[in-house]
Image (cartoon, rainbow, N blue to C red):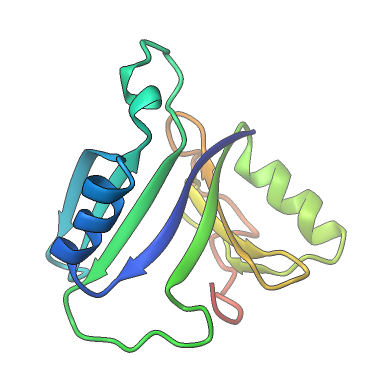
Length: 146
């Protein structure tokens, strides 16, 4: 398992980049626009992490800007922690066997969401290529929020 990123939702890109980059000193490492989902993802990293020639992805902060206005309350501005895993199906099965609800099953063989006992959302991402879709995951519905 490898820690990937934490995600926070933002209301204003310019204001947020001023705070995170100009004031804190983080650097923008990539940006993704998703017209269909109507959001922008901006990934930031500490300068020391961006200067490294490591083959391993450095931990990042993901800023998510939803194009449609939304008020964030109850901690909704903090999204999730993300981890890359070697076998998403095996890990989800282990979690489920131990009483953890799979909030967003890995129907696509690539991504799942679960929550900690304290309600913190965790995104689990399959390392490398997605695994072929398989049961029981393909037929499993989402449960609760993630």
